[in-house]
Image 1 (cartoon, rainbow, N blue to C red):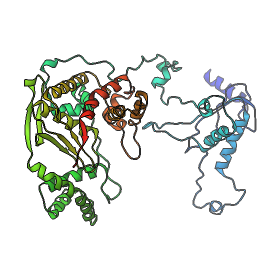
Image 2 (image 1 turned 60 degrees about the vertical axis):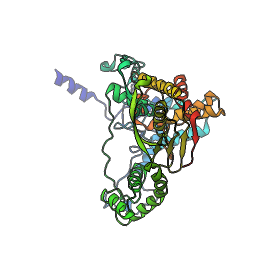
Image 3 (image 1 turned 90 degrees about the vertical axis):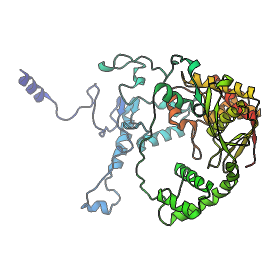
Image 4 (image 1 turned 30 degrees about the horizontal axis):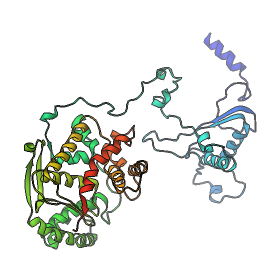
Length: 467
């Protein structure tokens, strides 16, 4: 019976493809010749797929010497696209794959679709809003995307709606016994410099590791970025112990820290010329420095640690960078408070190649109170990520302390520190901060309050210092 049914259907089938059958027709992009359709949908208008590229074989003599009137596959596709537009009477829907299936990166549409949008933008306007936003619709690439469940799904396997997604670490973790919790100076400084990293590593046990970088496809002719920072630190340590330049050059070259060949000598000469004055200014201070073990349990502050460099009863921090970062200021500030709470009344100093700051000495009672406030934030951060960002929080506190901007304007300026540009890396480029605030904004009332709570006392005690 099945064979008889198929035989009758094949015998009765009309030759050719009938587009005017009153039904939905699925076909290739064929020459419609302005045949009217209520709705025309064109799929696959990807940049690399349409118009099609014409690849001629090597023995095609016409392709070697083209003339006017020769057939062009790209021009044919452009004509088919125009005929499809002219055939629509009620609506036209044009679609392309706008995101990569591998990394979700943005992909460009076909050149004919881009030209159509540019033409519409030049010839038409809306009373409110942009024409592009009214015409453009971005649909999820995968059927299991959470966006596809906002209005349900037509596929039976995806029909049930997903529950609303909760933000990452939205609820606070159970409280810990803070009476038995002691904190080191280094841990407190790291937490204030990056609360998200402390929460992920200490409370949840998530450790983000960078993948092994791919091999360079070009020879490193100069030092830049993190590589230059590492070489600077290596050379500074050698200069501080007065290692001869020839020995320092041989040491760095043996570690493969310098570019290969004759370029190594030029790079070393530039670094040595930059760092030698800085090292010469540090040597007499380091010669008189000492290390101090700090334990503030007797002051009812559960904080301990070792201050490596103490000069004239004050902490000394230095880094082989041009400008000090917020983390540098916080590390020096925490150790400075610890020394002041211990009874030492020296000035804390943080030095860089083109930057230097100093902290005034504080009474022990004031230093202990400030440390207790910072420890309270540290304990809160063990339960949930505090919206405290290194660059943005410092920017907000500085602008508010200067009194030139109101709270809203200062917050907007601080929010710009989240994004990166060609000259600096923003807070959003940090992997731990990006993960902790991937589905919510850290900027709000709590951000403003925490920024002032951490940075306001530091800025009040901060003054420029001579290197």
